[in-house]
Length: 251
Ligand code: ADP
Image 1 (cartoon, rainbow, N blue to C red):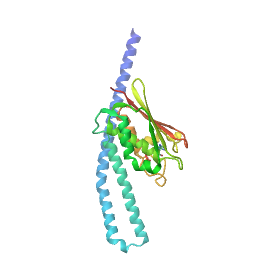
Image 2 (image 1 turned 90 degrees about the vertical axis):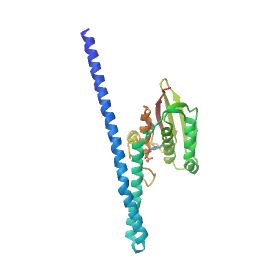
Image 3 (image 1 turned 180 degrees about the vertical axis):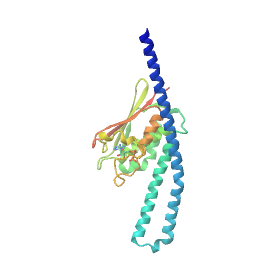
Image 4 (image 1 turned 180 degrees about the horizontal axis):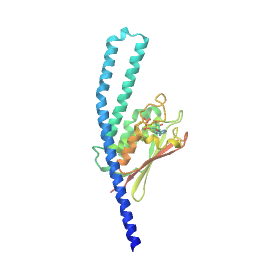
């Protein structure tokens, strides 16, 4: 009897602790998001000033520039452009989901929209996107569209040279969730980077070979977590990748 009481008390204590840690984590995440929003919002203003004065410099003084001056001004505008991309990405990241609306969402419709949005990339690369029996489920449709778009966009971006891109999408229902897979036949990812790629601004390639800012997969992670799901990848370098994510079934 005494043992049972001690057991229950201990279990209650550890549940309380867990709840406390969870609330702390949630507060920290909110704080971080707020910080990202303010920082990215405020950084836009000085960046605009740098860009517009560099433009003026170019317009009014370009004839007097020597080769070096031309090069320096070009580097400044290139970096300012890149910074604008990063700041916009950060801003979008912190805003992501703030206006989310949970709805019956047809993932076939989502895929149709995404294929339209990626029309030129798909046409240019000749990519083939195949999907079977995608479900209608309760989800945040706009966020789901961004999720599909990032995963398909990456499959096209990180394709193998001289191989036609194929993306296969599946969805399977278990007792309490939908599990989606996005499989490509691209360059693949080494196991040691499986976690790193989902972090903000983390990339495995230089901008010279693949454009990007390392934000896409952190968006995906945030979107899946807004749905209380999980996202992960399985891959082998050189042998394509499969991205998995789950969306709890709440209807
Ligand atoms: P970005 O695409 O801007 O580089 P992401 O956050 O979308 O940023 O991806 C992070 C990194 O993960 C990429 O730089 C790339 O190295 C790797 N990656 C993502 N998707 C794929 C894929 N389908 N195949 C191979 N590598 C990928």
